Amino acid sequence: MPETAPIAPASADAARTAAIAAIVAARQDLPGALLPILHEIQDTQGYIPDDAVPVIARALNLSRAEVHGVITFYHHFRQQPAGRHVVQVCRAEACQAVGAEALAEHAKRALGCGFHETSADGQVTLEPVYCLGQCACGPAMMVGEQLHGYVDAKRFDALIRSLREAQASNETTEAQA
Ligand code: FES
Image (cartoon, rainbow, N blue to C red; front, side, top):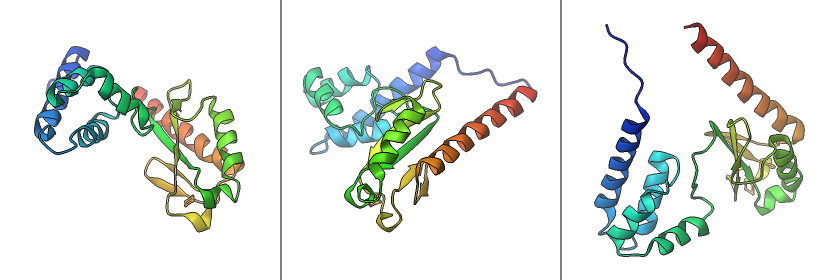
């Protein structure tokens, strides 16, 4: 059986452009269509690519600046692809009362990046979040889809280390295949 060729970047770009056009076309007549469109693009593409802005603006009869303004107003929307893993640290009140600020500062130092940024190795994107429903177990954080409670600096480091070790092991396995 012939090996499947990797998707060429041009094809990937074309597929992404087509996917975004379909999302916009399906939602452009909704009342308040901009936010549903942006959410859907981020959910499917992982971020809002720059070239989506003119497509959205044209469909909704808005200026590019208006669309861009909404994207930058809501920190939820990413303008760059996220790292391999998204780590969300809760910054809401109950977690703050038990050390979330110290955890957030430690996370930034340990990853060498701020909130809404990605570590230099491309592994971890750090995001703030405002309540994960784990208020009794704070400080809380989420690694991908996995919730973690009672997180202190030591536990944070262990979680990040295990992410990196798992990644290195996957890469070794792929290289040997
Ligand atoms: S305040 Fe952090 S989980 Fe609710």
